[in-house]
Image (cartoon, rainbow, N blue to C red):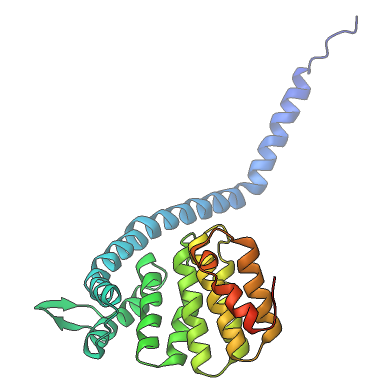
Length: 241
């Protein structure tokens, strides 16, 4: 059996002396590095709890009146120009103070409320036919996991580009609206039908046929397909089953 190896006293002292030498040599750097990590950690916590979260809460509080006003208009499909102006720029509506969404976008950038505001601002500008501004704000919006809302944002971008006679960009965004979540049958089939109709209207026959066929073949149980709408357009384009 091999004998168990143990360090001698001189060897142990030598290790300790080397460790002391290491600390003497690098202690300043270690202290600085540790301090930096501590400061960074403290800064992050301070940023999160004393800056970011309060901003999120404040933005959420401020956006509510304007968001509610826009929601009422959208629900009734009645977009009053004066009300849209209050939603965008702020003012008094029905006796209540309303913070304009443009202020929220500017002052509370990076918050979830500012992100929602980008969507509504884009929608408002689309209603008043300021298409470049609508495009700017809708592109700033991030739907994240809200696929239906993201699909609507892409659809509105398609509308804005269509109004600007930019057919390639318009069709591109109509297609994007259909591709956000292809498992969402209702949203996807509506977007595919819209994209196909637009492609057909601007003379992009090949793309129109492809879109209508995709709609018919991939979503046979959908309301749109059951109503025969894709087949009607395909027949008009010279395609029969």
